[in-house]
Image (cartoon, rainbow, N blue to C red; front, side, top):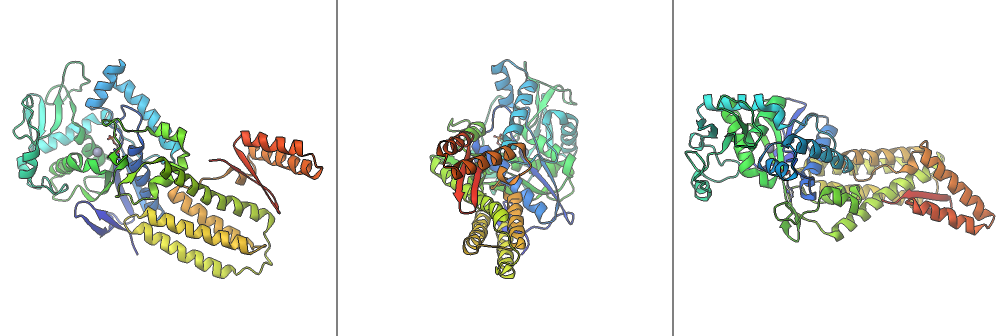
Length: 476
Ligand code: AMP
Ligand code: ZN
């Protein structure tokens, strides 16, 4: 089976066929950097990073672009409030974004363009739209001319009349139609501004994504993603602008993907509702791997409810996966024997079967929830083999570890455990303490043995005594 994605443009699952064979151009709307991002925002960052990994695992060369919105009303208000410049605010929260994203195992995009560093490209895109007859200048503002664009509404599946009926009419705006949206906003006192053919001003929000995606990915791209709230008006507007600028009759985006909301008490988590938990606070409260596990255990298009119980279950899930890896590592030191009667061919063919199922799940509109289920089947298979056989051949350990590592490279929910990195200085010190404790136990010096256990416990290291020796692991 090859990759099938639910395309919001057609509201159907479609076979994924890239524009350029073997390559994927992928644009994902990034954060507005006026504050720390919250757990709801983390959802698209995590799930689309995993889709990117899956595409790479499937052999594509992916160019993944995710922007930083570093100029808009929210940025300006917050900078005023903090008495700093918009640029200082952006610098601070881009750096905070990078810290939290790294803690959550979100890989850096190939390009992370900032709107304010692409003003010439933005102006150039607006000029093309005006030249093609789809935008007009009005007292230093530039607006997209909705009436000139019959396709408007094709992504959000609403016709112009319905959209017009719902549009907010603001008497201070100088536009022909209430649905017309700003590509360029004339300078207002106290706001950052740039020179343009229409006078000083700043770009509208939507145009930055059109200009930056075409700069880095070309006029027509394979995948564009974001939260479902971005479908209208942001993505509808981006599509109208980009297609009006390129004027080549081709769609701006071939596959539009939108993640469902992360809810809290059945409501969308959002800054404006005040019901949010920043990713920073969440990482302090829950293991980052558990947060990833939680996000990926649902289908990306379904809503998910953020609850402490859900996070505890996710942490328990991570622990099960991790324990399997630790057990495997421990057994590889104590129970490896190539003369074992273990049926390695049967084991490997079962592992292959599960691998096929994993790929089928991921290829079926990127069903990480089902793929995680398969990962647990793999763990079950490994655990059962470990339980039922005292000695196991080298290939068993190699294949099992390779499988777990591969799934972890894609999903990032197991993590490496320090007990595996034998060369690490801290691991060596822990191993030394464990040997000392084993010696103390042999000599019936239980006071010292308990002391070492407690010492390690205080450092988050948990010991487990087994007939083959003492295993250790780090608490999540
Ligand atoms: P923003 O910084 O507000 O532009 O949002 C960044 C990303 O987070 C966008 O793709 C939004 O659609 C997405 N987003 C915002 N709130 C939520 C939520 N509660 N659940 C899922 N995605 C969200
Ligand atoms: Zn965007």
